[in-house]
Amino acid sequence: MVRSSRARAAAVLATGALAVSALAAAPTAASGPPGPSGPVPVAQFDGPRGVDVDRAGRIVVGASDGSISVVTDRGPHPRVRVIGSVPPGFAPAVAAGRPGTVYALTGGGAPGTGAATLYVLRNGKPAKPVADIAAYQQGDHDPYNQEGDPAESNPYGVAALKDGSVLVADAAGNDLIRVYPDGDIVTVARLKPRTVEVPEGLPPEFNGEPLPPAGTPITAEAVATSVTVGSDGYWYVGELRGFPATPGTSQIWRIKPGSQDAVCDPEQPNQGDCRRFADGLTSIVDLGAGGNGSVYAVELVKQSWLQWELGLADPPVGSLFRVRPGGARTEVAPGQLILPGGVAAGRNGRLYVTGPIFGPGALSRIA
Image (cartoon, rainbow, N blue to C red; front, side, top):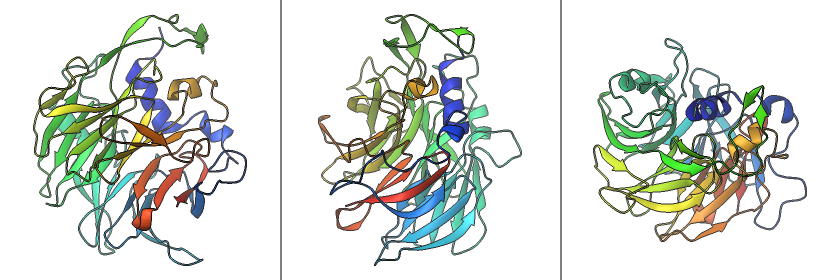
């Protein structure tokens, strides 16, 4: 049988094995000029992913070389300043905290490499480790694990809170955790798996491994990739969805602030401190807060990350949606984003997106 759902998803997110060759010269948008609301490149980066906007309106970006940059998007010539770095590899997630404070989150990797770690950068000083997320997960096993490794960790999304603590979405742990300034960690919520059906159109095998036929029910892990604090103060978490990555099965959860050990349950989505905000999305990799209780959701690939891995999505066009309370959504810049990695709302109605997340990319502005 094929690799497990979470292992396949983690491999795609962390290495981009197919993307490196396919996207060596790929633009940040699909072919054709941008429309009146299309993405306009602001600054070039290699493999940009994490993005946030600080209180002064500056944009924080994390790139694959581990660099953390602050971009000032004013006038005809935006200014880029590198403020520090974390171990390189897959681009870190970033979050702007209190004035002069930026957090960077590295993904899963071997012990002792600086992987799976939350860092803080303050006032030009070198990045300082705050918490070893992988070490925490060794003692906080996923009770809904489907793959025989309940202690696995691949932290992927990050959001800073006003009290100085930080929220971390762990894609392998299928949970949302909260890291305090002193390094203490608590589990906010756990995301339960969901039974989905294998989608149509998959090949019978991949790399010599058989794939199950269409319609086969499979329990697929959530793969929590993203977190943001909404304009209503609630905490929102987005799912990638593990193998078979069935399109339309990624959810966004709305979690009561201050929660601990909440359960996000697709079988009982409207109970408890974690309730479903939206359903029907595909391969979510980032969330950003919008106005009036809305949330922006980034989809890595419209057809799903698995179909991209199988070579069925060419070019790998992603999506950006504004999702409103009640689940209604509107696509932003449709067809113009290639493997987008992150989104953040700036001033004056501007949106900032990063991508492609593998190879040459950019921070782009959508007016």
